[in-house]
Length: 336
Image 1 (spheres, helix red, strand yellow):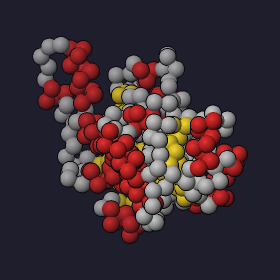
Image 2 (cartoon, one colour):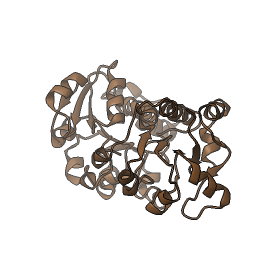
Image 3 (tube, rainbow, N blue to C red):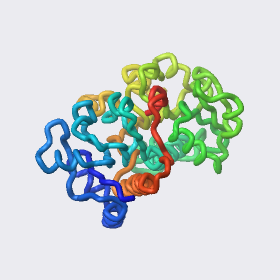
Image 4 (cartoon, rainbow, N blue to C red):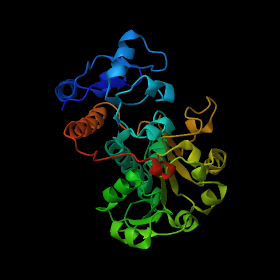
C-alpha cells in the first residue's frame, strides 16, 4: 500500500532534510508531492487544504505546525505522524492521542550526532584542550606544557552521565573503549539495568562530587528544571567540566556562571537558557567555556540520516507493520 503523505515542517527544512536519494524513495513509497510542504495548517491555502484533507500520514520535521483539534478536523483520513526529528512535543497535541493517531520519531537517529559531540567534549575536557588552547593563544611562545598539564588526561577519569536517555545510553556505549569510569544518575534505572550498561548507579550528589566531567542528558520536564543547581555545581571537584547538550533549563545558569567566573569549573555548553544568550553574557568570553549554538544535533548531511529513519518507518506503515520507534503518550512525561 502506498499511503497518501503530506509534508509539514518549517520553511526550507524539507530541502535540507531530503536529498535526491530520499526524495526519490519517498515518492516511491507514498503518493505525495514532495515539493508541496505545509508550513501552516490552521489556515492553509487551497492546495495545502486539499492535501491535508486527503492525507493519511503527515511527514513532519522541525517547525511542524501544531496538530490541533481544528487541524485534525480538516484531516479526516489522517492515521499517522512520522516525525523526521527528535521530540514531537511541539506539534503532537492531546487531540492527536485522543484521536488514536500513531506517532513515530527519528529521535534514535538524532541521538547519534549528539552523542558524538558529547564524546568529543568529554575527551577534550579531560585532556584540558580548551585550557591549553587558550593559554597557547595568549602566550605565543615556549612553555612547559608537561608541567602545566600535569593533571590532565583521560586515563582512569570518572564521567558522570545525568539521564539514561537515548543520547545518554549512546554516550555510555561510545565511552566503553576508553579507560574511564562511568557513573549514572537516573531515577528510572535500577541496579540490574545499570549493571547491564556497565555503569554504576549513584545519587545525583554523589555523581557530581565524584566526576571529572558531568554530562547532562535528562529530558526537559518540570521535575528537571535546574536539576543541576548551585548545590550540585558546588559539589563538583575543582577543575571539573560540565557538558550540557540537553536543554538549557536543566542547569541553573546564574549559579553556573558564578562558578565559571571564578575559574573553578569549566563548561561545554551547546544549549543555554535562553536559547540565545544575551549579547553581554559572560558565556561568550570566559576562557573556560566552549559555547556552541545548539549544533550537537543533526545538521548538514546528518539530516539525511533522520530522513532515512523516517522513510523506514513510512515503509513499515505501508506494509501494515507497527513502527519500529513509536512515540507513546504515556512516555512523554519522562522523555525529551
